[in-house]
Amino acid sequence: MSPTGTRGSVVVGIDGTRGAEAALDWATAEAAARGCRLRIVHAFHPSLLVDPYGVAPPLGDFPLVWAGAEQVLAQAVARVRSVAPDLPVTTRLLQSTAVPALLGEAYDASVLVLGGRGPRGLRGRLSRSVSAQVAAHTPCPVVTIRLPEVLGSCPSPPRVVVGVDASASCTDAVGFAFQAACQRGVPLVAVHAWNPDPPGDLEAVAGPSALAEAAAGRVLDRALDRWRAAFATVAVHTALVRGEPAHALIATSHGAALLVIGTRGRGRVVKTVLGSVSDTVLRHSRCPLAIIRHDTARTPRSAPTPERELRPGHDKSYRHRSIPRNRRWHA
Image (cartoon, rainbow, N blue to C red; front, side):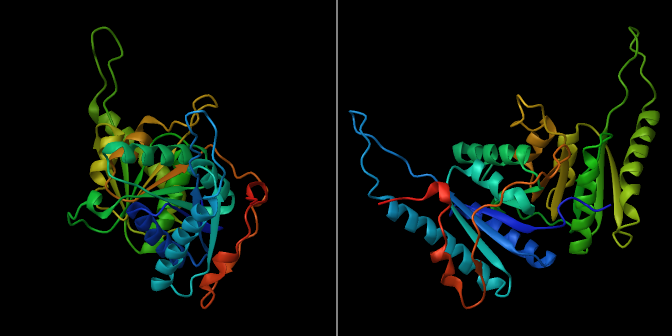
């Protein structure tokens, strides 16, 4: 048994914003710790303006737009090289909107890293929308990174926090959390929220709270027992919290090194929407958040256009990257 996401590259999506820089820094450290390749992905979608008569101008500015997108990648590579000069790095420059581009690059990723913005404003809502859609469809774990000012500076002990429930969706999440805690050399805190059993008749007679809490403890123990032997060196702490799961996770994980949650996904009709707990945590978490889907098996996909690997001393090789065949621009 192996936790989700132990093979492949660490893939990070960037867009030139400060949130993307924070995601790039986290992805660089993660790739170095895993000893794997880092793939930097930048997608751009130039606006096609039309005149009052509905006539679109020629795409004469497209080379400038493409050059600007290449510059975003070049700056990202330089940022990585400044802290991890020996880390294998590849880049992907795609003319596409963010969600399709990121999903296409996640086909062989061990983890996909995205930047996040503040909890308020239009940009924050758009950022969460991209993260939610990608997390709902991607075949690999998705990690969202918040800006330092959003996370705050409240002192907090280093730890990895994982949410546990009675469903099978938390199995892979617990494994991922054990691996992350082992990799970082920090304790694992497993959180399970519970509530007393509702009344079973018209007289509003409910079962004893002690029984509900004991049942919650058994759920927590079963979820952890599957992974304890494989990660015997990881110190494990448990937290049974009476209340709503999302609020318990947000409060318990404030300032943690990583919060890990599992999601069951949804049906085909509304598959782009995460569950209510995942969505609430995505909006309000105050630490890096990893979302692990349970219902998606890795299915073979056709590989994208071959990438050119960047190694020390060859940082300009990104300029010679081939454009995906179905997106070539002709003058």
